[in-house]
Image (tube, rainbow, N blue to C red; front, side, top):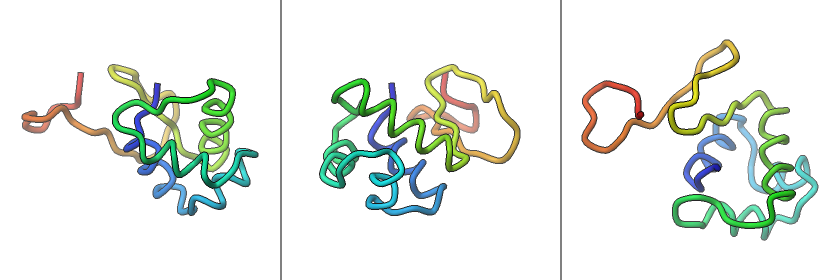
Length: 90
């Protein structure tokens, strides 16, 4: 699962706009806009979501789920749970 906030953040880290992500994923710009406007987890066709995640991965951005360790090297960010004081989200 990926949240809309993760998707927006991943696109920002990749330094690409919605149009570029849509082109790289082979989906329409309105599809990207709908996904990023979602509340919470992105909903939609699994195949489309997979294309978007693959496109972000190809741009060098790794999407992390809850309690999922990073498998690659490099810098990154992780959103902490609300109310946390410096410890990663669990």
